[in-house]
Length: 191
Image (tube, rainbow, N blue to C red; front, side, top):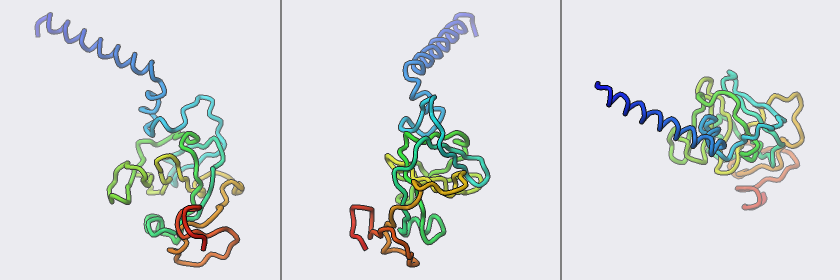
């Protein structure tokens, strides 16, 4: 390669590196999320005050929450039953902005049950690719966390379910004092 081509290639690469640096500096929020891997709707604040920490069974994936969940529900829909191998699913619902993935982005697996494909198409199921632990349901705006993954000694009141949803699909009756909805809370019939 002659000296002119070498210099031209060097200048081209130098300009590309400078352009990338400028783009990252001008939008550090997006740059962080490109590294974080979840997206700009998730927490980024360097002053993030950890309130709760959760992890998968093997510890490869870990995330934190800075606020209490906005609600908690027990879902009896057939998808939750089949995907969790359980009669129901207990979920604590967080705003995505209150969730910070701290470990294991490379271990996350995403499954869209509507498409039947291992793709991150929202809404989707999130699991650990190492141990298979279901991590959360990722909605378009919310993160539905599974309270049993959190590291607390006693269940905080904010994690206690406010209702049962899709109760008509239940496989066993639950005797408790919380409301039971035929579908989604507030958008279906009370049973």
